[in-house]
Image 1 (tube, rainbow, N blue to C red):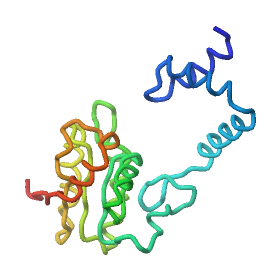
Image 2: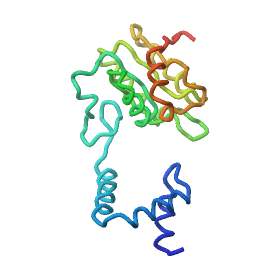
Image 3: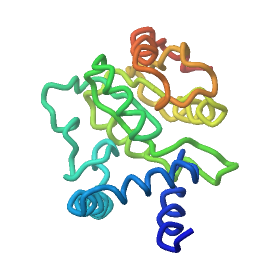
Image 4: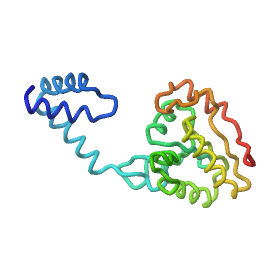
Amino acid sequence: MSRLLDNIVSELNRLPGVGRRTALRLAMHILKMESEDVAAMTQSIDDFRTHICHCARCGNLSDTEVCEICSDDRRDKTTLCVVEQVSDLLSIEKTHQYRGLYCVLGGVISPMQGVAPSDLRIDLLLDRIALGGIKEVIIAISASVEGETTLFYLMNCLKRFENLKVTTIARGIGFGDELEYVDEHTITQALINRREIDRNR
């Protein structure tokens, strides 16, 4: 195999979900593209990596300090949905059923992976609630061992907000399922049928 072809296949192969066969197919497709199209693609990747940042309020990806969701006056400012990753936020947004705000934790607590509570945006969440105005927090975290650990930790943190309603998405989503891979209908039903969490458990 050509060194140049091997290099691009190896780089594409580093992307999640892209095996060497798919990487080779993508490389051959890129080879057939017009030069200006390839240049536009590489420029957009470079711009994204250079200029993208996390929203100061919720942790969503944005090209400004505050993302479009947080700056949208039509959103319900009394409801806050807590998710693991930006991909989970995007999955919920695709349902068009939720009109509140978000807090993107940036992961879940996982001692095995070396992820502690301090590595997540839990302080951002607590500071946001402490400002006032939030009446309900929806915890939309994947039903995994790490997700349940994170849920338990969050519940302990939220106990100090006495009048706060805390719910979690209904578990029509199977244990161990990653939220970003769940279909929109299932996420919609999980949001509609969310249940209030026993805060004394």
